[in-house]
Amino acid sequence: MSMNSPSRHLFAAGVFCAALLTIGGLVGIPSGTVSHQVSKFAPPDRLPVPPAGATYHPGQDHRQTIEAALAAHGNRQNIVPTFFTDLIRSMERSGVPSDLAHDVAVALARNPKLDELAGMTIAGCFPAYLAATKDDPDTALADLVSYVQDPAQYARRADPSLRILAPETAAQIDEKVQSGKHAAAELIMERALLARFNPSLGARIMVPR
Image (cartoon, rainbow, N blue to C red):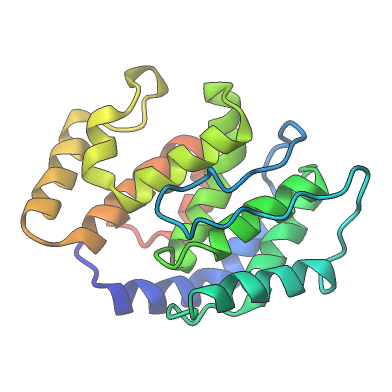
């Protein structure tokens, strides 16, 4: 399904409320903080490192940090800060440590190339991907961001043991990229990631083909 960037934005906004109900079902993941190694595409400044034993409260530290992250790149995607604070609350309710949920959301907010659909996909897949790869949180998040932002390159590099992409799906991604339809390639990758790592969320936010 071909979808240009404005359509992706409107589509993601339309499914946002339904998606949050499902994101709360994420499984718990190991404690830790995500440094700004999470994406080679994001601005070079590092995420704030939470003080030991700190507890974040949505609407306070969370919102201020999210707003600063969005302001750093001008927020051309026009994503409201509450999108990310709601992701934090959902991850916390599922057992994700507060500091890690905070840092994941800030890392996504700091990346000007990620829209709501990409953010929901990455956050929704993160716990299961982390468990499947047994990577550290930095590496797992960096991988997921790279899958979405550069689907053709990372389709070829996907670990076969993770069973993310069927050969025909990888071929579809290559075809879209070669024809200049990068947003459509992203959508195919997002659909594949959700089908593998969070099918219930995928059923909520992806229109059936």
